[in-house]
Image 1: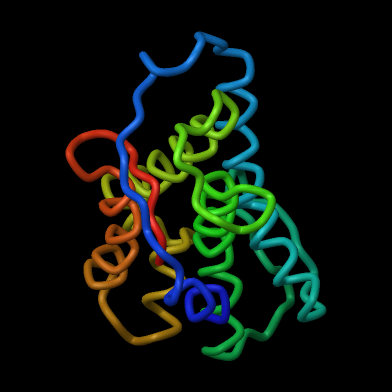
Image 2: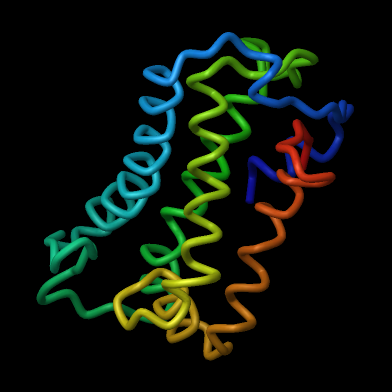
Amino acid sequence: MLLSASLLSTNAFCAGWSFDDARSDWGRFSLGFAGGIAGHELGHYMVAASKGYKVGHDGFSIVYPEATLTASGHLQVASAGFQMQWLLTELVLRDSNGKETKVPPGNFGAGVVCSHIGITLAYLVYLKDHKQGDVAGMAQATGYSNDRIALALAIPGALDTRNGTPQTHGL
């Protein structure tokens, strides 16, 4: 929330980028993609650990065994992955001074942005109703439907894919 508020007054520069603009380096792209997924999961872990919850795994799902989650706490841990991927995408699209870059991100950065879009699409298409998934957790915590939560999560991903190619943007 604070990040969003601090970025409201910044100038926005929008320009498309594509894989044609970057030197082909699938290793760095793959590392960025894997890093984006790891960042999403790390977001869940960091928030859960900061709240004192024990973190475990059930298949590919992160679970919080023996935790008594309040609605607020459940919303915080369920949404932490998406918040982390949004933060990582914004960091990739900014320079060391916090200003938007006017050049396409490198292959690593493109991988991070594509993982953000891929994770969002996975939750919209396949994982929206997964009982241990982020969307279901946020829906349970807020009382909103899975469809409504998924729509809210789709907005940042859609902003990053205007005109069919990822875009730089300011919130």
